[in-house]
Length: 204
Image (cartoon, rainbow, N blue to C red):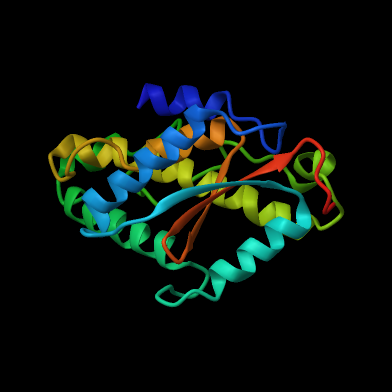
């Protein structure tokens, strides 16, 4: 769990990038492999790292939302990830030892794994002061997905200790991407889309 907490502590939202490091591509590839291993056997996708501004982000999110196979508020990638984590969590929480791991300072209410607090995002006025454009809701929603991935990684660390999990934390690659300012969005066809803000976007 300490590795996840260290990554969360150094996560700064919405930095700008001039290029895409090879290490980012490798992290995205790592997640795709884990997704196939844990969540969707036989799944094949190629990472697609996109630099851009508001217009590009809005376009990508709209296209991902229109992909078949998802659920309300979740594309097929995040929906399947969510169901997978819920199954593992439900099984693990039958164990009193696991339930006793849930509590302050991370979880405000003992033994309630789904009652969480803010780890990364600040209040809207603070968080959105440095966003590239005026579409505050767009960036607030992206920040919310960053927070969700961070909590999913922490929950896995807790419940996997019971033996209910199936291997390495499948969410930590997402947290590593986010710590570098690259944000997983979801699937477009056979492409796993990761977005980052360009240092000189043409679509702000």
